[in-house]
Amino acid sequence: MWLSKQNHKDKIREQTAEVGIVTLEGGRPAVCLTGERRNLPILTPGGYYWQPAAGDTVLVLKSGADGEQAWVLGMPGGGDLRPGEVWIQGIGSGIHLDVSGAVDLRGIVKLNGTNIEDIFERKKSGG
Image (cartoon, rainbow, N blue to C red; front, side, top):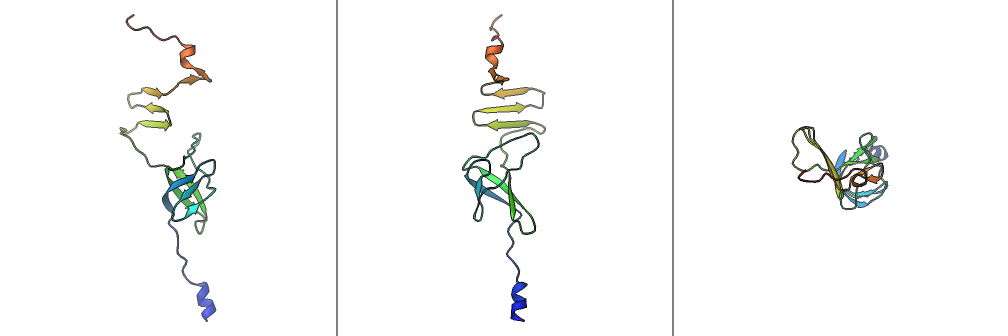
């Protein structure tokens, strides 16, 4: 009787999703949650690639019957965006898609690996 009850003890279940801090960066980072989880794969939208840096706050989603497979899913949003706007930001660069239809490129802009300033002449002001 005692042995059969031992098998039926309720396991303490982890949360399905948690926010944590990246402790080791790279293609399969480590994240500190209630404990550190290492070698986590990263899920991103199709065609978009992202590598979290050490110290980044990220969302970790746990799948599987007991949450044994964890995935780094994304970071908290921020900024003052209007509905329908998109801002893609890296360190030192960014792309802002405005609701007016404008595309604002920040940083050094290259076209097929060549600086755009080397391809097109700068427009002279006042003329």
